Length: 211
Image (cartoon, rainbow, N blue to C red; front, top):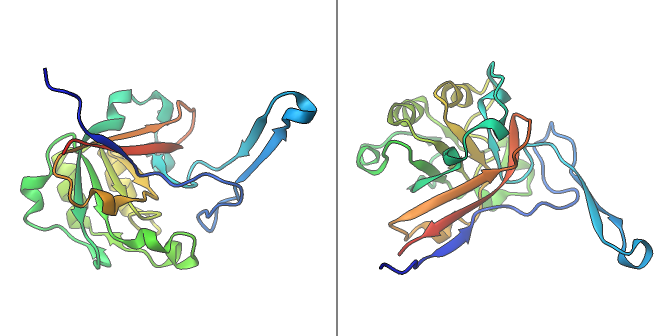
């Protein structure tokens, strides 16, 4: 039989105390609560809003929904990946070649290069945005998730978020390491949230690259 060749590429940001967060969000607090010498074991305590670091947004985040992210079937969080190189595009528009690249149930990743600004104020205030035409194409294709090296695909009033959510497409934000995928022809995305009763969740996102 075929041997299981390939490698996993981590596309996730670190979670740490006082890490970068969206300007209106509370700071992340991560500290050691138990020490080996004193308590005979080590433990840590985390206080985090769901949209810090690499995370997945579910529809409940911005539209009427009673389905928590932990209730969404687990097969929604894994699928064939396709990466669109959209560097140097401040408005990310549809291109004809995407018609052949993107298929139903894919997980589409947008490589903008903006992730290099992570940790700066302009990462949040001056990021590229997804054009409505591209969002229309992706919803028409019935993709599973749209991921990106951005804090958001759009700005207030978040019409692109809402369009994707209304079409049951989840959004992965704050990806990193996308350049490593730029040569990959075949890869699979694994992006699992916590099984949590919330509108979004931090996630460990990886790409399984076959070639």
